[in-house]
Length: 405
Ligand code: GLV
Ligand code: MN
Ligand code: MN
Ligand code: MN
Image (cartoon, rainbow, N blue to C red):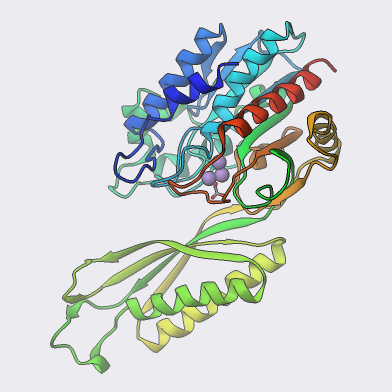
C-alpha cells in the first residue's frame, strides 16, 4: 500500500505556510496542482483518467461499463481548511487500488475513482457544484454566472483552467454506469474519538442550506453622526448573528454565520451595507425551517428597528439523506470482520458530502475515519496515520466485496 507516499506528495499542495491550512478552491492554482497530482498518480497505476463535462475527474480501472463501482471524494477545501476533508478519500481510493492489486484481484466489474469539483463551495458559494452539475441538480447557466469574491465568474475561471464552460450539464450516462458509490471521509465530530473503532459507516446526512442576508443602510461619519440619525446595518447584523445561535440552541440544531462582508469596511465610517451568510442544519426539514424562520424573524425585526433594508436569498439547499440500508448494512458487515470489537458505529452527520448528492441517483455509502479531536474545516483537523491505514484497508475490503458480488 502506497498511502504514506501519496499523502506525502499531496499534503503540501496549497498549504499556507503560516496557518498550516489549505486554500484549494475550484480552478485556482492549488486546485490545478492537486488535480495534476491525482491524474499522475492514477496514470502511474494504469488507470484511464477522463474529465467529465463539469471538470470532475474519473479514473477507470477497466473499461467504463454498466455495473461499475466507484469511490472518491474532493480535493478542494474550505478557506484555510484542513488536510483531510476530501483529500483523505481521494488518496485512500488510490491506495485501495494498490491493496486490491496486491491481493491479486482482477475485477470483472470496472472500478472508477472520482474527484468532484468544488465540494465545499469555498470560492463560488454553492457546495457540491461538480456533482450537482453531473447529477442534473443545478442549472448550468446559474453555475456559469456564479462569482467569487473578486467578481470572477465560474465560466471565466473554468476557461482559464483550460476547460470549456459551455459544456456544463448533466451526465446521466456516467452515473448510469454506477451500481454503487462509496466515499471514505475523515469524521468531523468526536463520535469515534473515545471508541476502539478507527472506522465507521454512515447512516444519514442532516438537511442543510445556505442563505445570504444583505442589510443595506446609509454610510456616514463615525464621529459626527448622532446615534438617532444613523441607519447602521451592523446593528441588525449583530442581532441576526445572536439570533442564529439562539434559534439553533432552541431547536437542538446548528446555525452559523462564518462569512461576512462589510462595505466600505472602514473603521471611521458607518457601513452602508453588511452581507452575512447563514449556514443552518438540523436533523429534519421542519426543524431546519423553524431554525431559519427564527433567524429571519429577528433579522426583519431588527432591520426595521434600525431603518435598514433586508434582503434574504437562499443560495443552496440539501435535503436529508438516508443512505440505503441494504448497502450500509453490507458495508457495516464488511467493517465488522476486522473491527477491534463488535459493534461498528453507524453515524449520522451534519456535514455535507458529494456522496449525499449522489445518493439520490446511485446506491451510496460512506466510511468515516476517526478524528481524535473532532475538529474539522480548520488547519487543526487530524487523523492518525495508523487510522488512515485502517481506513484504506477497510475501503479496499468494501470495494472488493462490491466488485466480487
Ligand atoms: C461541507 O463539508 C459542509 O458540510 O459544509
Ligand atoms: Mn468539508
Ligand atoms: Mn468533505
Ligand atoms: Mn463536505
